[in-house]
Length: 209
Ligand code: SF4
Ligand code: SF4
Image (cartoon, rainbow, N blue to C red; front, top):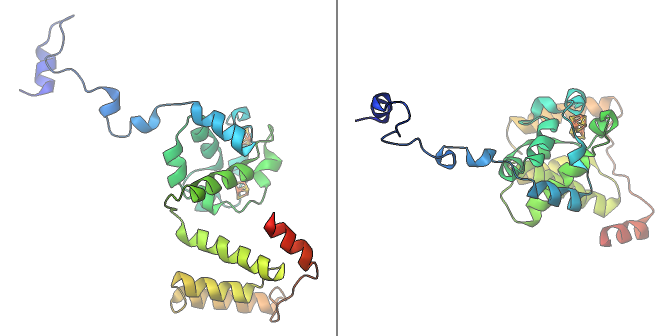
């Protein structure tokens, strides 16, 4: 006899023969259980007052990269408020965010979302967790290596190294990037000779810190 049939036969006030499964047994229900523990930790360690967000979505409406995100920026804050750490760790949004600060400028409560996203990335990276956007992480590493070497980024070398290491050196991605590079060069936006900084000592101290 099915549960539905048992329920139909149970009279008013009588218990069901097979009680409904408890909420925690339903797929995904665990992930929706709110917890303020993470909110407190996140605020303390990131220094961002995410509790101040009241969900007006001004951040998301102004974000130039929301088209490439799986969660809107305001959803990142909301999930953090509800303690949904796993959802945040698996999302693409924190890796897509370019730290352009537009959301912070628009936020009526000065919720520093780029800083919060950086904290989420750093936390995940330090914990050795799997990064959904492994190629973005690779790009971050190569970008920083460029800055460490010259104090500036030389796009030609950065893209060549990125394409080789990410396995896209011979595919259509390389061709698309070559076209883009040529267009940038024609507009004077891409140099052929890398520039460097004279502030070597300062740069060294910065990376040491
Ligand atoms: S703009 Fe600020 S307050 Fe509004 S949803 Fe975004 S983070 Fe929250
Ligand atoms: S800092 Fe990130 S989340 Fe904020 S507007 Fe820019 S790309 Fe979007």
